[in-house]
Length: 195
Image 1 (spheres, rainbow, N blue to C red):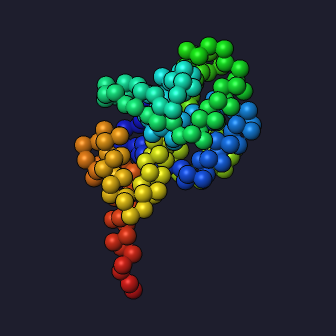
Image 2: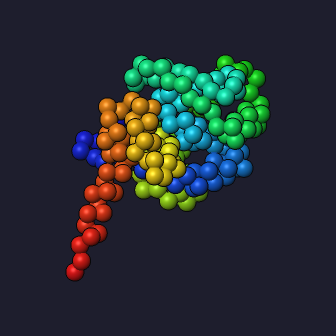
């Protein structure tokens, strides 16, 4: 829960920065955090849905489905082929014996809390020098969205329409605002002024 009238926005992570962070965390044997950040940025799920993932979902094919906690809607997620290898590497490194085990557990073997994830992210930001002003578990979903729009190039409006549907937003305009694109566009208005 946030403090009343406080700014609780999360910023996205540059894609290459995220990939380097995922790799560095894996190298430093922080397998679950590496996997969590990767899953969040490759799947575009809310943290409440990421925490429900079990190994069976991630390792039984090239896609999985789930019922989103917030919306109650069914969502199908395709797993990137390169990222599948990372999932398997994390699974093997953790020596998981039960495929029905949740992927993101704390030291007591319980599903990790969102608050604990955000505390870990604060530490990661400082230790790994992540250049993001507001880093939180919600940054993963925004990173996914920004990468989709940036990769679309001239087709970015079509990408926003697709993202709007994936994110269950009422319109692409909401998705534009959600990703911070609208604020950037409005700020550009001031750049045309000369003195």
